[in-house]
Length: 137
Image (cartoon, rainbow, N blue to C red; front, side):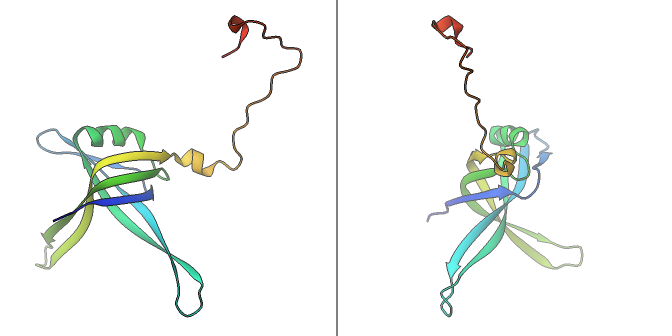
């Protein structure tokens, strides 16, 4: 059997950090994932958004708890897990989550909101960089 998931999306909120009794960290967050499709009737493109809960554990959880924030775009590789519980009124509930094995940060929220690309000013004509020691970087 195969249980493997790859998702690209943006965090919908800042990560939530919790600790197990053993001291291991769990970092949880949710991402928004879009799906584009064409309708049969009008050949018009539509888009749906899905909100997926992600859990990370151990070192990955520690690292992501410090690096991620709302709006960050990430690539998640992991597997599906179903949590089951019973409410106080006796109703049985279940929810599918992704347990991440790997997470790559694709862009930050600041980069996503930046309207114009950052430009590096050109050196003034009067500057003379005749040797490597004079180069300002």
